[in-house]
Image (cartoon, rainbow, N blue to C red; front, top):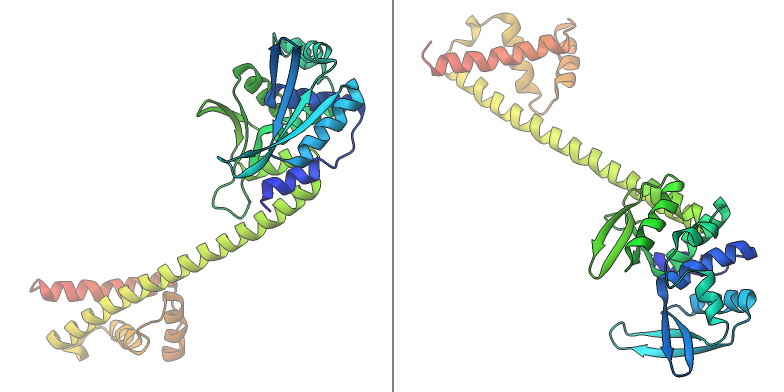
Length: 309
């Protein structure tokens, strides 16, 4: 089961008040319901590929409007899934007027979403109708709600940003998407719509993923540093070999000779490790900058000899 489906399965089992149901129904009507007019009059068709959402739509509609409903199923060769059509036969005019399905009066939308509870319910209906979310274990975090209507997109964005989700809008194929890209915002969105179990699971997966990514980054940094250290050490060993072949070693400064012997004895050691070994060898402490200065002097001496100075 996909993460998106598990979120929707949690949402369709939520209990809600009449006001919440009205707001949620309004979103379902606006996003996935078409109006048909023929000789028999006007009818509404709500479509979905999720049997649970179709059932929730029917239950809410019957409770609020006592409409006569015909539930049909169809095969979609394109999606290779079973689709569902809810055909609303009675009280259609009242439903259309109550939810401003013809003229899209924003004032009507706002009237149904005056409280935070109603706003949450409307957003929940939008996600159930045409929302999707990436599994948090995937490389990118992404949540979106699709709509073909610009007014609807702006209204959904406004509701989401009422809860500080920083939702954005962009064009997508034949419509628009209202989307979130930040992991924290997506987690908060799940909490806003009442999918608390999914939110906790999302956070658990996200934290583990981010932790593993952090560990991998640290390991990669450590490996890179080790390679850098080995590369620098190999270059210095070649410089030391060149110095021994072209300069009387005994005539060198004692501190420089001690450092050369130390590097030859511990070719893979880091700067900190060399400092520790230097104190063991000479009994004298040496700072990190002091050790680095001596290593630089070895390179400079080798360069001077190569240049004939």
